[in-house]
Amino acid sequence: MERDVYGEALYDFHILGDLKDTLLLHSSYGDIEEMPVEVFYRDPEDFPELEHIALALCDGYILDVGAGVGSHALYLQNKGFQVDALEISESACSIMKQRGVQHIIREDFFALETGNYDTLLFLMNGIGLAGTIAGLRKLLRHSKMLLSERGQLLFDSSDISYLYDEYRIPKPEHYLGEIRFQYEYKGNLGKPFHWLYIDQQELIKIAHEEGWVVQILFEDDNDQYLVRMEPRRGE
Image (spheres, helix red, strand yellow):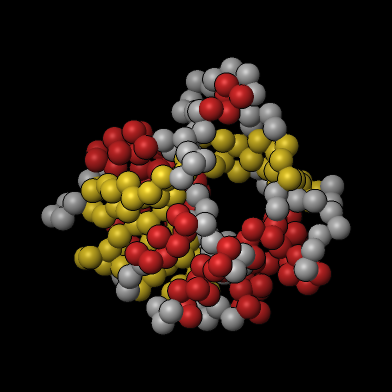
């Protein structure tokens, strides 16, 4: 059975308030980065502007996809919204319960078969769980099944093409934003996974082909951008 090293790091931070060991993130573009676990535990005053805009646009019955330890779900819950916090990590779900998140679903996004959500929220590049361009098309189709008639998607992503210039590595044959990651904690490696970062032009093209209306709402200084999408009515 694969170890949930990401969840182990989250739990150690939850118990200790700090980590003696570093959570590392290996990537297919050749870098090993330190993953600051405290970023998952941010208070609302520490949310970046992009996230505050997204949270302000949340409406109705909300699914917080990849909820982590529940920072965004708690914020919305405290504002009086009905929020389901969706998370696949057992440790993260346990932490959310301890932190007071009321509605937790431990499941893979694609395993959800029904829903009537007014907002699907994917923050901290949560849309990346699509993994690939083909996976993004699958995610958009699946999202239509989970949305109410007035439903919307809110998510952020970024253009990471600069990495290939910065690290002077050959560009892959597949789409540049399809990255392979693997967590490492206390010398243990987690299961490798694919994650997608998509540039605005490619996103708009795919969204239109899949029957979605796209609004780019905000861009920051780090090539991150916030998107609101809704299905074209009648499709």
